[in-house]
Length: 85
Image (tube, rainbow, N blue to C red; front, side, top):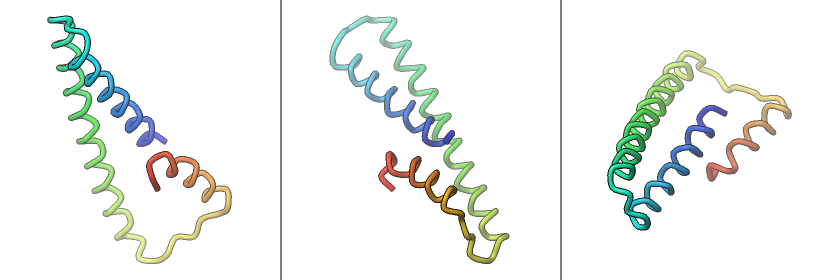
């Protein structure tokens, strides 16, 4: 759920930055928003990299197939579909 929210925030931020870059030219305010957007984006990228490595390590320790309940499967589908899963 945290990953989906972060992804949604990143997409929203990207669209906002595109709007400001193409549309209104607000000088300092625009530059400030672009700077904040870049900082947030790089932070989200680092978080995703960390989560990928963490998942790889944890999966390697399991060594067997993981079974999920129907309720867990529904939750996975609910949050995976908007991501293109």
